[in-house]
Length: 315
Ligand SMILES: NC(=O)c1ccc[n+]([C@@H]2O[C@H](COP(=O)([O-])OP(=O)(O)OC[C@H]3O[C@@H](n4cnc5c(N)ncnc54)[C@H](O)[C@@H]3O)[C@@H](O)[C@H]2O)c1
Image 1 (cartoon, protein in one colour):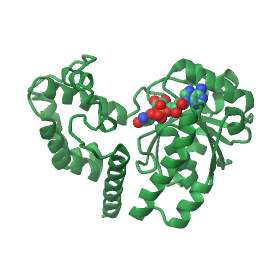
Image 2 (image 1 turned 60 degrees about the horizontal axis):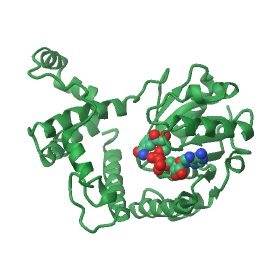
Image 3 (image 1 turned 120 degrees about the vertical axis):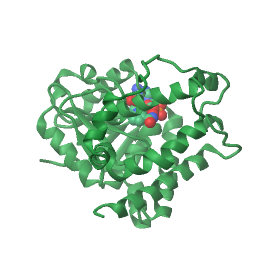
Image 4 (image 1 turned 90 degrees about the horizontal axis):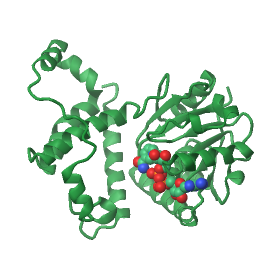
């Protein structure tokens, strides 16, 4: 089994720049490409900012950070990025036509034995991948910011070789990540399905005036999150006792929401321009603090939590 050492990163936006960094920190040489000149200019700046946060928190030492930054090169065209890559990571816009064109361009230049990994959130990308590349293509789906959040979903297509899945599992486990290997593609994987189910309930609580944003986040941060972080949901149920879980299912006192496809609260916020931290407001107000500073604070907080969690392991 040859573990990839040279990576082409196609798409250098929100996820692409961060995934370039993940692979560089794992020791790979990375050529990152984006069709948008602004994204190509922004990527190294964002990578340096992320490395500064990782270094300040002690997650990465200064020499490691410098070496990782030195392993990333930004290039203008797909052919230049993929020409000698062992692994091509696709993180372009979530659009079938764009991804189909990008896979065709990758196919034109990539080595015959290159592995192609898509970071798609929801698409079954396998019908978009050229026939001759099916055996060495998979989905490797990450969670933002992937240089801090270790979960990566690995899903094969109908023809993906088992050896390709194992190579990718070994690569990412070796980078200190936490790969979950699926037997087949399931839309939403596990974590996104759970988030989607939770969001349905959250938007109903808000839309029907049963709870405020502060009530909901307070319940998560001070109740659910601590227990989930310590052992996940199923280990937690073992501690609760499974008869209790059985009774809770049988005695359910309300009906979970049907997916409605929209939320009144969300629509009102978006219509009034409160679209999240990039706009300075969403469910909460962020004042004049810049998005870059908000992301830096979020990353620093995640790193402190991750360090605390790592200390509890084995305990
Ligand atoms: N944002 C997230 O939290 C998240 C999480 C997991 C997976 N994803 C997935 O990652 C992928 C990228 O999402 P993102 O959030 O980084 O989006 P983004 O818009 O920040 O980045 C996409 C980049 O692709 C570039 N691009 C578009 N067409 C291209 C082409 N033909 N050639 C080269 N580059 C091209 C764009 O210029 C842009 O910079 C999507 O498939 C998305 O579903 C996103």
